[in-house]
Image (cartoon, rainbow, N blue to C red; front, side, top):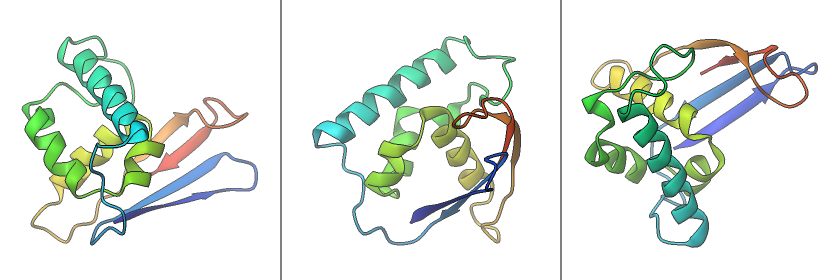
Length: 128
């Protein structure tokens, strides 16, 4: 598993490719950095469950798919780098994308306009 990130020279286009498979350093949630990532993920999940982000663009809707058990199952398939370096919002979106293609050709594409990255906040397009 790995995430390949590509950005255009002007930072207006971002392409993230999530590749699944065996991970060199699987996420365990055991060291300080991984525990901090779990805290951030749990905080975001709590906001989702409370409905705080309903209707806001680029956030996943509250869902049973986002249960602690499903998230833990997904994280076990991810590398430490992927989990620790992604913002929780994108990790949850990518988890839902991964689940939506499970048992199929395992390919999905999503475009997110207004992606905030670097000095071009709100001006980039993220392709996942």
